[in-house]
Image 1: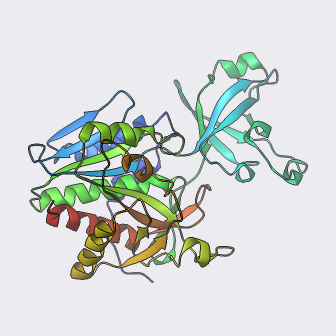
Image 2 (image 1 turned 60 degrees about the horizontal axis):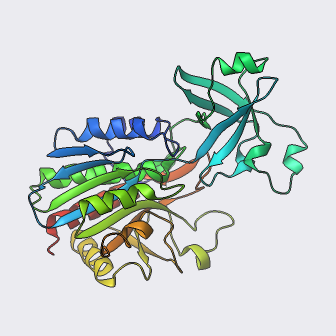
Image 3 (image 1 turned 60 degrees about the vertical axis):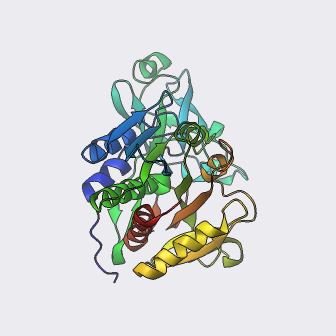
Length: 344
């Protein structure tokens, strides 16, 4: 069994219970605003709903922390004559995980519940797509359904947040609301320890689709350096190949990435801090893009030195992602140490 980690469960549960499909991130941003309002010097929210919490804004050194608030999901695209909802995907959903599943639809009138239609023939499809999915909300006609749901309403699996053995936990869309949790907790920890650097903790929008949120934030903050926090695949479950993912496991610590977009000096700095403070880290290698907000931030302004810190995750983009509290704490500890000790 893993050692006990003191998690801020109220804040984490507020993040994970929100519906935040790309384009509908406001509930997550509200939770972050509420959590950091007591220690942030300033909180900024732009037209796209990116939220940036600021510490020491008068300092020339500006460290950007970035994690994305949005999750993958479905969007209502049409209502059939029989009252079923047609959908399109938003982000990289795995369509095969949706048939037969209960769902939540976020509407202007509140949460509406439904079930994804399922037939044996559907499971025989070689490549299932979102356009083949239909949502049953109990309505018997288009008019009845239209009184409850609008075109454009977001849909997510109706899942639970569950604690597992050994300090592990499971929820929908840990990707990447666990990252938002990490940067928020690191921000608070650094502020409480008297951090002197300028810190800009950004909960960004739209990473799962365009990554435009991170670009907007970086071009406005103009950071000296950036740390992006996201999740990464583990290699410790059936079907995963360490030759592709790296030897990454739950409970092994924060994950650093060797990639041509990431300056080696920043990885070295984080590795030295980890060694100094006894923080466990593990490594992955990316052959080209990181597929995170780091890809946009790196190219913003005149170029931003950007490093990636990841939380190991099992079963990414499914309704039952699994993470480990020890890895979350390792990420928080490493980033807060960086905020306190970084010198430009």
